[in-house]
Amino acid sequence: MLRFQEVAKHGTLMPISTCSKTLIAGRYTIQQKLGRGSFGTVYLVSDKKAKEEEEQLKVLKEISVGDIKPNETVEANLEAQLLSRLDHPAIVKFYTSFVEGESFCIITEYCEGRDLDFNIQQYKEAGKVFPESQIVEWFIQLLLGVNYMHERRILHRDLKAKNIFLKNNLLKIGDFGVSRLLMGSCDLATTFTGTPFYMSPEALQHQGYDTKSDIWSLGCILYEMCCLDHAFTGHNFLSIVLKIVEGEAPSLPAIYPRELNTLLHSMLSKDPSQRPSAAEILRIPYVRDQLQNMKCKFTNMTLKDPALNSQEEAAHIINVVQKKVHLQTLRALSEVQKMTPRERMRLRKLSIADETAQKLKQLAEEKYQENLKRMQELRSRNFHHVNIDVLHEPDEQTAEHLIKSQPVTTLNYLSIGCEDQSDSDTTGRLCMSDPVERGKRLILYAVLIPHLVKAR
Ligand code: ADP
Ligand code: MG
Image (cartoon, rainbow, N blue to C red; front, side):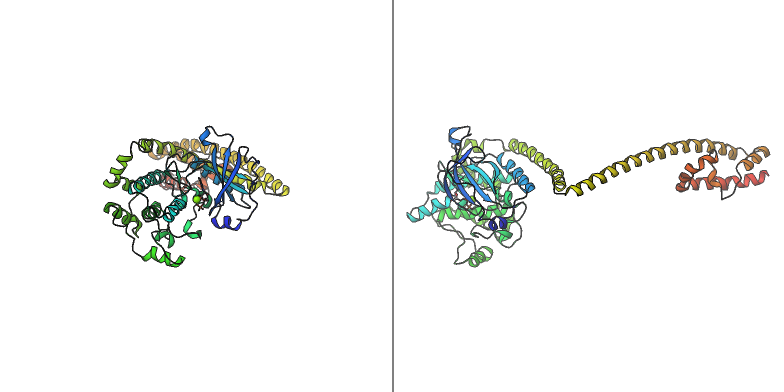
C-alpha cells in the first residue's frame, strides 16, 4: 500500500499530461486545474463515455506514486472497486481509479459549488452568517453520509471543511475512504503532517482512530458552520494540539438552541466512548424533528432500506476479501517472474522432484495399508486359534504341537501372528512398531505359558 510519506516524497514526479487534447485512460480530457491538495493535483475533466449528460464533468485526482509496485496498485484498485459501489447523496461519488504513467488517478463526481472551507471564508469576508436552518440541514446531511459509511465500516480519517463540497446547495463529503486507499491500514495520525484543526485528541496522541474520531471532526465542522471559525485555534501547531488535547470544548453563541450546543459538547468529549455515534445523533429528538422537516426534500436519503444495502455490500466485501486471497497466488507468481532463468530452471527441477517424491510416498502408503490389512486378517485368525487353546485346556498333543511349531521364547515372540517367516520382513516392521499389539501378545504368552508347561 502506498504511504502518505511516499506520496510526499515523490510529489515532484512527472505529472500526467495537462494538454487539453490528451485523452486519459481513453476517455477523459482535462478542462482545467481545480487545485492542489494533500494527496496531489485535482483537475476538472470531461468524460466522453459518460452515460448521462450531467455526469460528463468529473474530477480527476492525480497522485504521484513514483515506483509503485504492481501488487500495491492491484490492492489500491480493489479498495477503489469497493468505494465505487457506494452510493449516497451526501457522499461525493467515487467512480473509478487507474494508473496512468507514474500517477494513480481517482475519478470522482464534480461539485460545482466548491468546498465548504471556501464558502465559509466567503461568508466571513462578507460579514454574513449561515441561517440556523441551513446549518442544521447541512449538519444532518453530513450525519446521514457519515452514518452510511460507518455502517459499512469505512472511516474518513480526514474530515474537514476542505473535504466537504457543495452541489446544488447540498453538502457532499469527499475523499471518504480515500485515505485508506492511499495508506492501507496505516494510521493517518502517524504520518499526517497537515492541518491539526479537526484531529481528535486520540489521533493526535497516537491512541488509535475509529468512527468516534470522525465524530470529533464532524463536531469541529458543526462549530465552524455556526461560528465561521475553527473550534480549536492557536498561533502555532503545538498550541492548537494542546487546546485539542487539554482545553475545554468551545460553546456555540447563545443564538443557537441549547440542544445543538449540548450535542456539540458530546461530540467533542475527550473520551471517544463518551461521543455519540452518527446513528445515535440521528435519534436525538432535536435532530429527529429536524430530519422530519427535511424528509420531503431528502426522501431518497432516508427511505432507502439500509439493511438491504448493507447486505448487498457485505456480499461484495466478502468477494473482495476472496480476491485478496487469490492475490497471494498472484504475488507468488510475481516472485517467480522476478527470478533469473537459471533460478527458474532450478525451481522447475525442484518441483518435478517434489512431484516424484509425492508419488513414491503415495505408493509406499498404499503398500503399507495393504500389508496392514493382511496382517490384521492373519493375526485375527491366529488369535482366534490360540484363544480356543486357552479357553479349552489343550490336550498333550495339541500342546506339543504348539510348542514345536511356535517355540516360546521372548526372542521370537514377534513371529506370532505371522503365517510364515517369509512375511516377517514386511510384517516385522508393523509388529515392532505396534507396542499395543506387542503388549497384547505378551499377555497372551503369560497366560499360555503355565498351561503349556502344565501340559508337558
Ligand atoms: P485536500 O487535500 O485539501 O483535501 P483535495 O485534493 O481534495 O484537497 O482538493 C484540492 C482542490 O480541488 C480543492 O480546492 C478542492 O476544492 C478541489 N476539489 C477536490 N475535489 C473536488 C470535487 N469533487 N469537486 C470540485 N472540486 C474539488
Ligand atoms: Mg480533499
